[in-house]
View 1: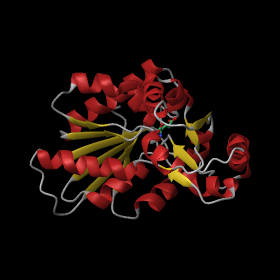
View 2: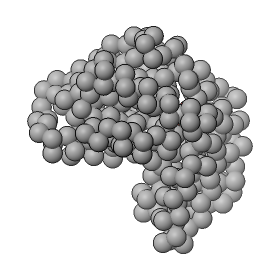
View 3: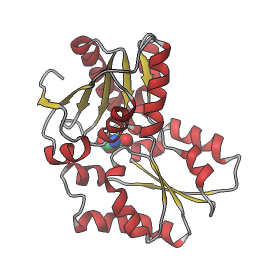
View 4: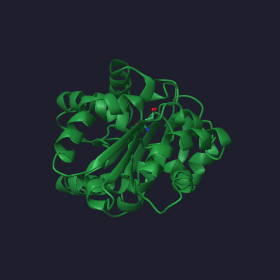
Length: 261
Ligand code: DGL
């Protein structure tokens, strides 16, 4: 089985890494579209076009059977169109984990961190309207413009990143938030900084493991037998911080820059 996974950069590797823990005997192809990052500050039309181009590339160059949109922002802008255009393809998107957050919060105060595009997207608004209407909770939503760039630049530990997080997290700390939804696949890469700033043990919700399990279940319905080795090929459309890639993925992959996208 061949599986394509994409994101604007490093973030989707947090999903890919979860997939490698669950799936066996598959070929994994990952596109980090760093040329067009950050997606979260682009228009829905631009994000849709990037997603269509990458999916077309995966199908032409690697004949994929399944696609994981390892990006909340691209899922919001493109999953509907991609499913209409490619009904035969298994397509799994990434959505902010509001549901697990509602299950885990004890204080009833939940933070949501995401890109500007995800928070204003119709998909997120629908998700929140349906789920939070059922429970007595307060959501503290915070767009984090610039955070993806900081992570892509390798500035995870920098004081500028810490200051940005402090500004966004301060109201959450003051309001007894015990659960934060990491609504962008880049944000697990700064999870330790978030916990440091919140000064307490937090439920930090990201959905990589749930996506991996869903992929396994869907692929088995298509006859996949989950045994054998993994083959991982990473592609970037521009520069990427290879040290961060190695930290997330370990050593067993190839990486190359591509120009046909
Ligand atoms: N990692 C992407 C997400 O999950 C967004 C990154 C970006 O803004 O490029 O939303």
